[in-house]
Picture 1 (spheres, rainbow, N blue to C red):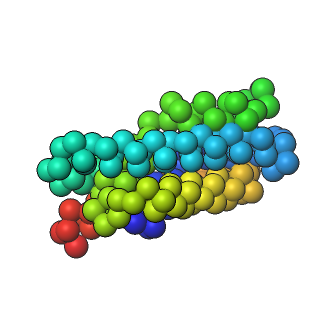
Picture 2: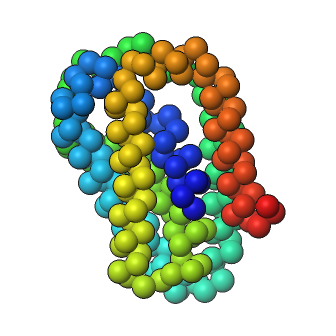
Length: 189
């Protein structure tokens, strides 16, 4: 679960690319409110994902295997998109990001929404359904995402330059790891 989560939330996505650009302009301190907004939104979505998946599992008991395959298919889709991803642009946003921007970015971030649903349906709910543990896993998933956000923010232009030069290789490695995670979910590996 942890490898799949890290590959998903540490790979380039809306939050990480925006933090990369913004940190190169405003620094880490200038982005703290934005990052805490992202983290608050992420924790909210992880809690909602756990609640949704466990409720759906209680209403439709046989849904768990179906959700596992849907989650694996989504991870394969992410692998394909990762292979196709181009390097980030050199444009930097003009407006300094705020907490509200970070929080609402999460609420519309399809990658994070599907990430939460996939993690809970494929990795957590088959083994644990108690509410306190679901909340603990939501916090854990949010912390993994927060660490990824910090890595991208700290890297700033350094990672941006490296990624721009070697994006095909980096994308291929991330995509292959995602394929591996998808095969593990369905029990092929």
